[in-house]
Image: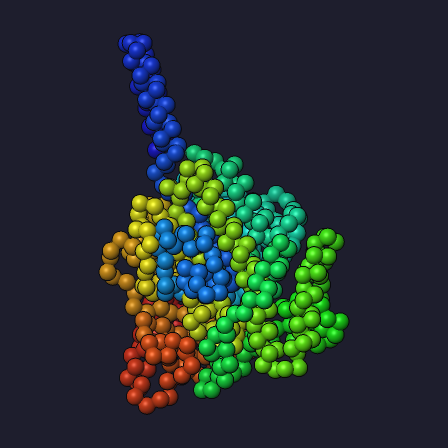
Length: 527
Ligand SMILES: [Ca+2]
């Protein structure tokens, strides 16, 4: 629009120049104003999509104020819309990223599990935006094995990436950056924003590695939360009675974390007493990325943990509580840096007069267990990993302080962003535009469909349906087991009602709806 309008104005001016000198000056100044206004307010809004990795909603203060304060992330929700029931379709890193890029379920987008390679030839959100005049970029975690496609600029971590002095790969060369990964991702994102092609609207995916396991905080934050007690979730000591899916998993805080890699205790005997055979080597590889000065501060900071470990390790209950506290300390320290990053980019938008015309999204690739059911990690369809944080700021379009309890999905992100950009949503995309949740429309889905495929850590593949009130899960492959929960009376999902009398009709209705969703989403292989 800008170029055509300017071309016409210059032509008009040239014709009038002969008529009057005064008129000419007037036209020049008005053209100048129009140039400024057309650059500062392009028709299409910019889109800043911020995604962290494994950030449970329980660790965002606008959702849950007890664990940590995240004022900058909260601001996006306070100035926009907060989703209290946002879910993922497959709760694990690479598959969630593929869903977001394509707007399609895992069985149709080439990535069912973390080991699969993303087919970069398929249609994706950044490709469509780029075709429609957007300048596109991704910085940070990519995790899809094939090289990014559809971006004018990409600078990403190889694989999972490292927290300290990390390697990055981009379209030109590999670079090792000095510093802490969250701060580097912020800096690279801001550099791109400063140097982008300002004639076009932008789409930037800023993808943090944090707070992914093994939760290595910025050196400056290593002593945050020292001596803070974190309340244990009500179902930390879940005994898994009646729920076979949980009985075989190896993802508990008390039994399946490594003393050195996860809890950072520098004890000499820890390399032989490990849960995961790969943990000692991986611990040293990660630690060896620190400079000698950083290493010294690291070792000094974790001395206290070794003393505590020796004090509590013979007392089972104290030891379990200590493990939970150690988990929370480092996990939340990583989130402090993510929140600082969000603050920096929001400030940048404001200082550069971009805040009014930039849509900001904050989400995570999925949720995470922070001790619920005794777990860490994700994968299961139980609420804390199925849910993900989601908030959108869109000045002038979304009323400040909105809250939506509609059942929304990461599948909806691509259609939503296309809708915001004024681009047609391809029919093959399976999600819906979230504009319908903030513009007063009443039509919305009444149930969501989930399918998890991986087999590691003792978790059996499973699929299921969640409605506003109920959740039905079918574990298959390693086990064959069904679970039913009434989320209204049992929000912690402790009581499997599947075999209980009085629920046959509910099971039948949910099974029928589940089959309908499998047909709708073309995922019929498990029927
Ligand atoms: Ca993840």
